[in-house]
Each structure stands twice: as structure tokens, then as C-alpha cells.
Image 1 (cartoon, helix red, strand yellow):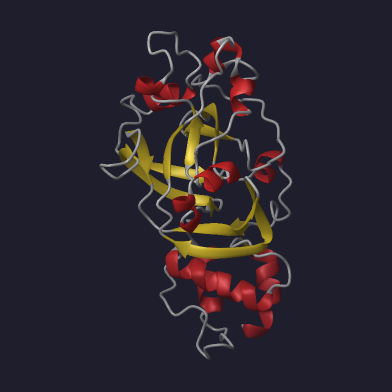
Image 2 (cartoon, one colour):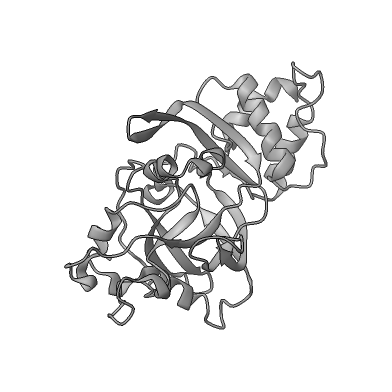
Length: 297
């Protein structure tokens, strides 16, 4: 989609992607709609992380901003913002369930703010994230059909929701103008097709190392929020046999139901805090985990 919004929403068996440096001011990512039966995907520019500039300008967001960690999440149709008194309400996809989030520290300096990743908290919580349009649009005087990259350099209006570049139709500066640039409208139109109109949607969230094939555990297996199956049950049983030194109780006391959500993810985070020297991720790299816990089994 380099420089051209009009190709967004086109299903193809392959799309070229490239990693970009993340700066938390004009944050960006790739959002896709995938058809598993055909293996085709349509890609859109957007964001999944908070904008430091937005959090600085909106003090009320400082208590709720978060970075949703990779995993499987459920979405449903609704409106953003959810409040009847919210500003610029428009169709969106809402995440009502629990999720695994990262919350960095916030440092305010003069008229700007930045995130401090030396002071990060990891939580299993109800993040209240939505998937909706970002409040960005082509700058005046630019060619709307060749403005994809320029729009990606504009500030995003997000404290951590998943956004697709574009404004809902009533808020485009010139409603009578050609809105071929508006990726959000393409995105929502695709999900209005009968093949997708289920009311419930799966969100698979990856990071760039997955797309680049650079993840250190790619060959050994990894479990993320939303993973299911016997490997998860195995992890649950191990966490149920390891005592938390602070409480004297097992890290995990729930059933071995094979679902890496809620209590299981929280238990694993507490286990990582106790036994892992490296950075917390909330992701189980299976082979290293089994090696590290073999004396508990």
C-alpha cells in the first residue's frame, strides 16, 4: 500500500510488509482481515499502542492507557466511545473480555511526555480496548489518493485501542470530497459483507518479529494469551505444583482446562516475576519453561 490508500481492502494471497521504527508519537502497525479458507488477507495501516502525545493532552487517559500484548482476543460490534456522552461516536469493534497488557511509566517534561519502559507493569485486566478509526486524515492540499505514508506521520488519537487510519464519514473535513483514502471505511465495509457479519470476531495480535520470522522460540513453540490445548494444560499443572514464596500457595490453583487466559496468565506473570531475570513478557516459550521447571516435576 506504499503511498496509495486505494489498494487497501484488496484480498491477496501475499502482501509485502516491512518493519518500521516505533516512536510512540506517530505509532503505526498493520491491521489485516484474514480469510482462513483461502489464505488471503487484506491489510490496512493503523496502530495498536498508545500515543504519548495523546496521553499528555488528555489527563483522564493516564489512568487507563495500556499496550495490549500479542494473543487471541474476542471482539463484538458496537460504538466508540461507549458512553452516550462520548465525543465522535461511530461504529467500532469492542473487546469486553480480559486481556494481557503492558503499562509503562509516563514521564512528563514541559509540553511533551514519553513512556519509561524501565518502569513497566504487566497486568491481566479488562482493558476496555476497542478497534476503531484513528482521528487522522490527509492534510489539506495533499493528494488524497497518494497520501498513505503522509497520513501515517500524523498524530494518532489513541490511549491504547486498536485503530485503523481514517475518520468516520461524518467527520471528514470535506464530506463531499472523494474519500478513497479512508482506510477505516474500507475496513468496516469489508466486515459488513455477509461472509464476516457474525457479530463476533477473533483478533489475533502479533508483533513484528512474528512477521519477520525472528522470534527466538519460533521453532520451539510459544503460548500467548488466548492459546489453548494440551501444552497449556501442561503449563497449568506445573504452575500448580510450584509454590509462590510470598504466599506459600501454588502459583496456579485453577483447573487444567488448557486455556491460557485470566487466572492462568496472571499466575504465569507472577511466576516470571519470581524466577525470570530477563524482561517479563507474559508469553510462555515452552522449551525454556520446561527446562527451567524440570526439578519441580
